[in-house]
Amino acid sequence: MSKDKNPRRVADNEAMAKTRMLRTSPQKLNLVAAMIRGKKVEKALTDLTFSKKRIAADVKKCLQSAIANAENNHNLDVDELVVAEAWVGKNLIMKRGRPRARGRFGKIVKPFSELTITVRQVEEQA
Image (cartoon, rainbow, N blue to C red):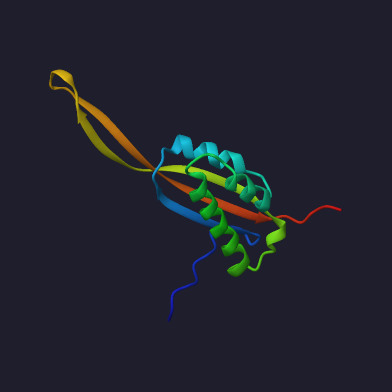
């Protein structure tokens, strides 16, 4: 009398990794995510390694997690993986402030984001 197995959220030739609470705005994170969409994973890792954006290190960590999930959990070939999707979402916003002149209050918002990366195994055409 056990529960049914949870269905997979992605296809049989895909694997996914998600990172939450990344301390950057979704707009800035999307610039880095757009840089790797549709590329082979080795090229995407190289681009993230040499990127000057601060958040690129966290995106690289998420991509490496997706690659490890594909290899260990779903038995996919790492050499044939492509970044199928990389999408960005909003998370919480810390609200801080700073006193300004004439009794006013300067609002400082510190946004957080989340990143989801899906890798797909694609066979190369000869």
